[in-house]
Image 1 (cartoon, one colour):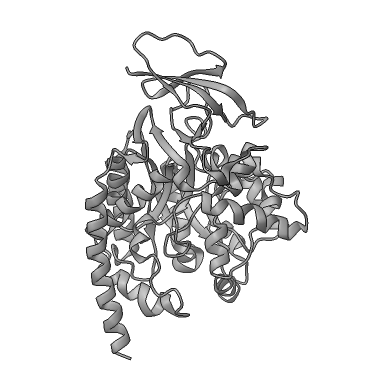
Image 2 (spheres, rainbow, N blue to C red):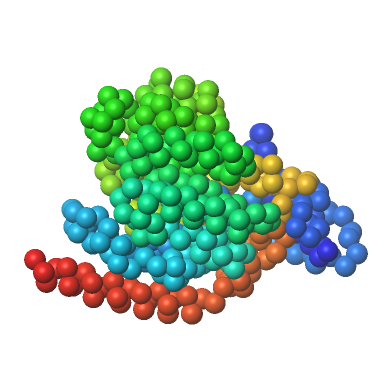
Length: 441
């Protein structure tokens, strides 16, 4: 096994007290963290010793909700009110193929690595391609096969959708980094019968996470009221899907009673502040959810909605929106934002026993962040610096499971030029289709 010693770091292990260890070190053997501390590191024969000269070393970040392949829709029709129905849904049905998903996911993986994200929960179509692409990139992933009743690209019936889930589970069974998931799209796009079937399937397949969009928008609230006389959380509960470990994305429109019910059920939440705001959908009650004991991670949503896949772009909105709700600087302090981006995100995915913090026995998923940019200096509170000043370009090195997948801003696990070229070719087809749609008016 390869041995690595990282020394002279501003070390952020993400422990209970959010300790900052100056002149810290980490000892890694193979894929696992052996030890960490401050001062002089141990002498380990044959180890690669890396002096990071005071840079931040912290856990790799966790993105608990994304649609990676939608990188190829990024920026499309931004100023068109009805872009979802005018462009996106018709183009998904026409262009979303295994190859398109592979190319879009690799583009998203490249972007994520460069931003220090080491674990991603994805839900989309042809999800076996997503898992293969994340594996190729060297990333860790929870890959969720979407189930929906709106004629999605990869299944015409729910039976076909469940067959895809079974294939996904079989392909990644026992994989060290890729975990299969089942992902009913949302209450309004599956309804109670499908969600109830998912709940039964999940009970028969312990260890396979369930992902779901929940309480995201006004139209969803109206659909649930009109069709069931209930709010979305109650609809999901009626279906039996309010299960321990459910990964619920968004959760904007929930009240205190629903928060308490979700907490009792051990539902976890993927918070998408940037995409929520960009769509004008509202501000999630994150402080209230966390106070009730709900684990909340910071997510990007799809790059069609939030445009970027880096968590740095989320940090400001996550903190500032809660401060706006509280009319104070005190809500959502910077240290807690970083905790949500690492350990709490891992808890949302049920992976905190392996990742999310730097501790002996955990996987060596970590990143190095350069502090030399003028906007990063001076440093009074390293967590505040990371939340309000840092950018993806400050991430220098990325390690997943003891393997360096980026060093000195060079992603070693992927072919950058080929990925960008392939993405550009698909984007050209998208442009032509948009022009055809516009010309037909």
